Amino acid sequence: MDWINAPLRGRARPGVGALIALGMLLGLVVVLAIARQRDVSLVIAPVAGVIATRSPGPSPS
Image 1: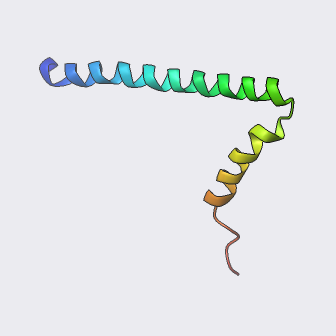
Image 2: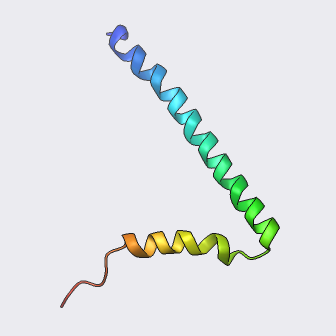
């Protein structure tokens, strides 16, 4: 049984590491964008645009 579960555990660690690295890079980009432009709205606007297009509208009555 351990032979079946061992490869699955081994694949999870690099995936978690990659997600952590991606999150750290994204955080660095946000910090650098705010430091350069000194305007938080330039960082928040694209995120708000994605959320606005992905969220469902009001339900019809």
